[in-house]
Length: 404
Image (cartoon, rainbow, N blue to C red; front, side, top):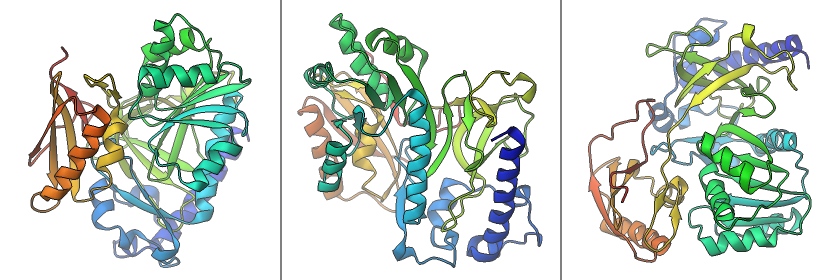
C-alpha cells in the first residue's frame, strides 16, 4: 500500500472502532463522550484500570466464556489481562508471520526457538514437529544445552533463530567462546530489550544474520517491527501509536514521551489509548528514509528496561522470563522485583493485592525457583508497599546489587 492508502485504512478503522466502543463497551458508554468521539476524547487506559475494569471493558456483543484470555508476560512486574476472539488470535499469527518472513523465514524451515512454555503439550509437540522447531527453555539455558542445540542445527539449511534477545545473546556468547560460527539466515527478537552489543555478538556467532526486532506485548498488541532501516515500522492497519507527555498531551514528532497504543482489530475488548509503560519517539516525517521496504509510519526508538541477566552459581543463566514464567501464575501478586543481593542470594520484593501471600504460595514459588538454580541460591521474600520504577518510567523487575 502507498502511504495515503495506509493512512486511509487506519483512519477508517479508527473511526469505526471508536463509535463501536462508545456504543457497545460499558466502560466507555458510561463516560461523557461526544456523540462522535475522536481519539483524544477517550481517557488513557492504564494497567490498573485494565485490571480493575476487565469485565466492563468487554463488548456487549461477546460472551466472556467464548473468548481467549491473554495475560501480560509480567515483564514489567505488573500483570494485566485482555480477551479476544479465536479469529483475532489467528489474525495476530498472520501479523507475526508477516514480520518473520522479512528475514527470509518461511513456515516449515528449521527454527531454534527460546520461550517460556517448557511443558510441551501434545498440540505444541505437533507444532514443533511439523514446523521443524527445536524449542529451548529460555529461563534455564546451560552451556551444554546451548552447544547441543547449535550442533544439532549445523547441517540444517536454511535455518533461523527466534526468542528473547537476552537468551539468544547467551547462545551467541557460547559459540564465540568456542570459536565456532553457526550460519543462521535470520534472527527474530521479541520479549525484551535488544542491545547493541547483542547484535555485535549475533553477527560474529551466527554469520551476520538478518535481525528482525519486534515490538509488542502479550496483551495481544503487535505494534512495530524493525528490519531494513534503523527505525520501527508501525503496523498502522492494526494499531495507532501516540506519544504523549506526563499530562497526556501529544508531543511533537522527534520528542520523547509515553507510548499509548490503540488496537484497531480487537472488537471483543477494544483497547484504546493503552499506556504500556514504555517511552518512545516518533520519527519526524521529514527524516523518513527515501528508500525503505514499506510505507508504514515510523517509530524512531523505544526506551525499554535494561534487563539484567542473573547467573546462578550452578551455571544456569536466568533471564527476566525465568521469573515471569513462574510468578505470572500467582495472580495475588500485583507487582514484584527480583534483586540479586550477592552471588548466592536473591531477594524477591512483592506487592500483593490484599494481605500477605500464603505460606503455601511462597513455598511453591521458592521450590520452582530452586529447581532452576539446583538449590545454589538462597531465596528470601519481602512484602513492600512500593517498587520504584526505572528512569524510563517502567517498573524494574531485575536488579543486580552485587556483581561479584
